[in-house]
Amino acid sequence: MEDPGQLKRAMIDATAGAIAGGISRTVTSPLDVIKIRFQVQLEPTTSWALVRRNLSGPSKYTGMLQATKDIFREEGLRGFWRGNVPALLMVMPYTAIQFTVLHKLKTFASGSSKAEDHINLSPYLSYVSGALAGCAATVGSYPFDLLRTILASQGEPKVYPTMRSAFLDIVNARGIRGLYAGLSPTLVEIVPYAGLQFGTYDTFKRWTAAWNRQQLSKINSIVTDDSITSFQLFLCGLAAGTCAKLVCHPLDVVKKRFQIEGLQRHPRYGARVEHLAYRNMFDALQRILKAEGWAGLYKGIIPSTVKAAPAGAVTFVAYEFASDWLESIWT
Image (tube, rainbow, N blue to C red):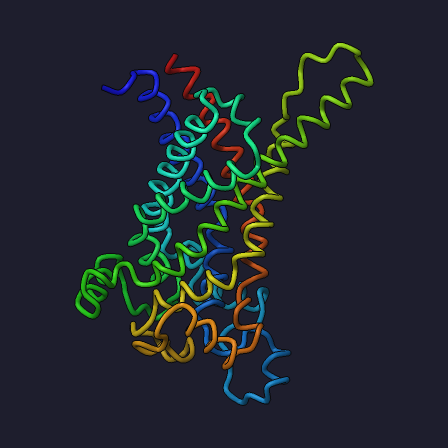
């Protein structure tokens, strides 16, 4: 039978993770919507690329500012939170599973369930723990991620008016397996992404604690406090999210293409990704590279990076605060 203390710790991690994920996703939803629109657009996403490739066909979105104006004009403020319900249904169990599994793995690796002991783990163990936690969370919440992409990628007029209509169309067109379309590149992406995000976050926290000790030692020869401030936690999360996103973005583009492959798309938003357009992940990378160039693999990189930095920061800070608050009321 599981120890009550461990069960309580798991509940704290799961609840704090769900709260952190929900806050982060809602705050950064506008940037995520713009990113997804860029990623699923087969036409170039910059005016410069249109001129350089001598393309006469218009692109719906040709820049972050233009996309923001278009979405606001055509869909109103609500357009920036399109698909936020399945996003929350995805991200809350995702972060709950992720932080719970992460804490379990770190407890196993360090031999202690105390969070303050986990900061001394080697960077390699932090990377591996983050990667495994990311994989577990992805598999557990993936269908909601797919529904989020489909609803966020459509504008007005809507092809799918509700989450239920999108769900039924996917099941009718692809079967139950269709709810996991793009899972392979997602898992390949999440291993380095989650590993980098959590590994670099722990590394930055270690460096910050060491820097705090060094600064305090100049003032007082006896240093007893090297605690990290909320702003420093925010900066650590900011840096971790940015590093992870820059490395893994091309695989995120491939994932989005698999998710919308063969599904309906209104003509005003450009060509749709045809059914079985890509044989596998490597074929998708090659075809995108050939048809759209390197820029195609980095479509949406600007809103993605702008989003990843605050998303990582908000997630980590919200988790730390929620975890401390839950510990205080449950002990």
